[in-house]
Image (tube, rainbow, N blue to C red; front, side, top):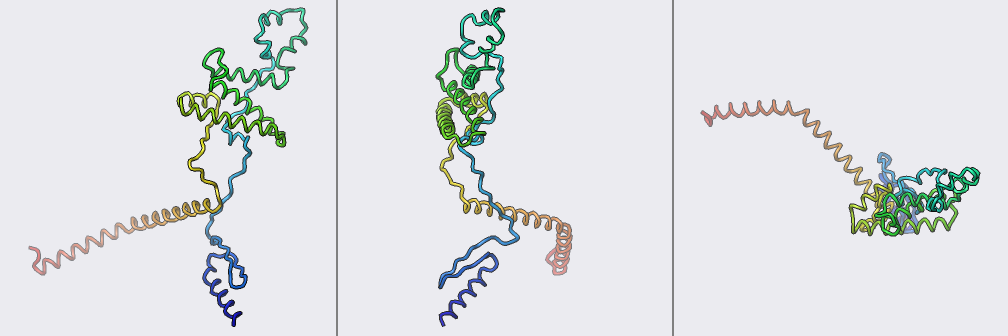
Length: 264
């Protein structure tokens, strides 16, 4: 008797959900139903790609490091007094002169020159090195240098952590500048080719269930609009016949009223 009752319940469950159920499994008196969409409904959700914290799309860097002229002097030599006279001296060999340029300088010296060039385009005065604009510009060059290095060395933990810390610090400074001087904030973003991504309020996590619910709503709205548009075209096509039938009906009503003496 018990087995017959269980089998009857299984048949009832299958009949009730066979239109939109993919598979059903039973464990004693309990049943687990795995629901899916019907075959004709094309709703598919792909999770967003997992980007690392240092990725340019996540940090807001729209461009990479600018091209550097290797024939320029290093920052230390360019600030030295009478350096032009020394380099014009014919007694100094060309190979010795090249030692003072960026061609044989290490990567850190080249980044120093790029930082100085970028800071000179946004700083407030000649000796400005600590304002918000100058600090953000220096951090931007450092971040882009580390991003370029991490493309080929993803397992370098120290560089990855340092890049993440610089991104968070720059974001904090941009948030402060945005709060107190919005015009300068917009100008700085345009100068450095940056995109600022503020944190959403409230923070809504991306889940499969929530995304499918929104996609289903969009799909239903699309079907509703398509059917309303089709019904509107159908009514528009019947408009001439309806007006003709309406005129004939009004004419017949008028004749009947005259026969009954309701109209003169």
